[in-house]
Length: 323
Image 1 (tube, helix red, strand yellow):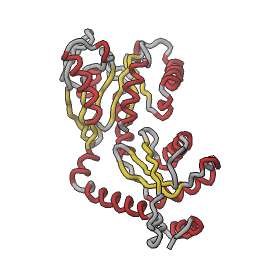
Image 2 (tube, one colour):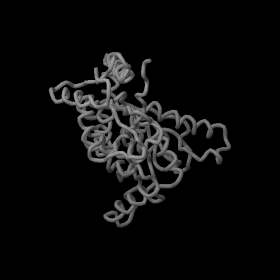
Image 3 (tube, one colour):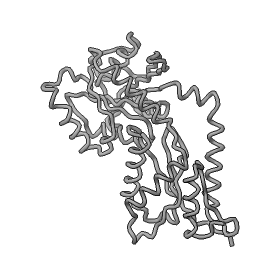
């Protein structure tokens, strides 16, 4: 019988009693019934994905190595596997297809996918190169984490930015590796300067692990694997609905939506992992400020430990009423 917004306070009182999920509804007027339906759907999907398949998926880490030609992808694969599984050459474009390797590190099963370099499509003339581009893009879908390999001598380019945007849109874990770091002069000052340049080109890099390494000398490999394990845990992290909405109440009181929007936030729930997805319910999604979505992403990231993975938030309305 939470018929009006004035009675929403009753809902938050129940959170304080320790209930993990409380939804205020009005059966007579249909208020927030769509939120209840969504929560039921989320719980059912969780039951479907909590079997052996889900447990196996969380125990395996699939990493795709992407980057422009001749950035050292095959060398990195060989360093990770400690064996020669792909041809390593100074000639750009030697490795045409996806090379897959497996190993165990700290009791975690790793699968590494190495692809041919992604070139700008307008420069692709050979059919095999066109295939390589599309195969590399599809490899992102098959991975948990993408390692974007950049030549430290060349730096982060516009083409790298396009690949990075694609990884971010697909919600994959993302590590940016600066390869051939052993050839970089004055390394003590270069990393901070290079991070600044990368963040200028690609703003999302502020939450991105940027790791220097030398695949040829096998330097930085252990840190790359440890970072991958941390990111993989974040990809499968779930936030309790009650805890999330208690935090949401605090965030909304700290940073109000502009009065002119007349938007009222009702409720938030996590609807997916890998990619990490949340849905926020409001009275209207028209004109919902992008800046406020960024604010919510940052709060979720800081409070619930999603430090290095993309966070997707969908805005839905709770406007349905029954006659």
